[in-house]
Length: 213
Image 1 (spheres, rainbow, N blue to C red):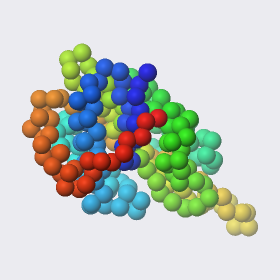
Image 2 (image 1 turned 180 degrees about the vertical axis):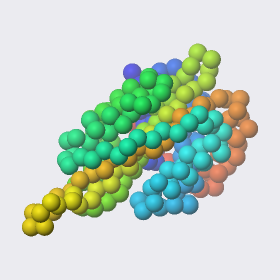
Image 3 (image 1 turned 60 degrees about the horizontal axis):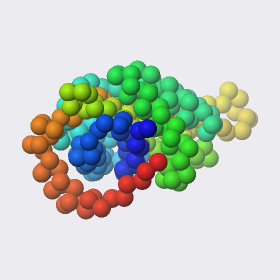
Image 4 (image 1 turned 180 degrees about the horizontal axis):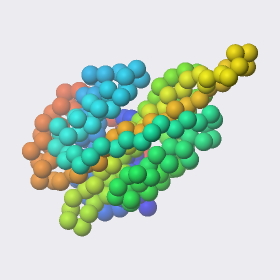
């Protein structure tokens, strides 16, 4: 069974076989990328710019960027549909194992009381808001390389267009996926590890709590 953890705004899922030292490196990279992107852009107000900066920060910290992930937005009108509709956004991810892992991590999150509490405002249809988090499945190849799919999921809640002005205002949620495929390799990351750790220490992020789900 895969291990899923919440780190900052990242829901990270490790397929069995990823060594603990590699897990630690990957989580450091993800956390630093989140901090650096948030220094440049507001995730709530300018998510497209934020996720672009986040993807670039991952590459700058030693992950090898293999390609972008992008899907057309999907509209839903109730909380019950969030999990199933969000899961459909992962169908185009390659390798297929990572797509399956992303859907599994999302389902775990919806069944976890800890995760629901952590993301309690993200699935609220009662107000206009923009929320986001990243689902990050990771799998080790026999060669030792680790495939990573970074799936940034934005949830924009807004008034639903009314065909008749006298109808009550209803809200809809627009789900948008943006991200990228990456490869982690110990030898490549070794040149960046010390700089990443120093940057996290300077930001006071070393003691950030991990939440298991």
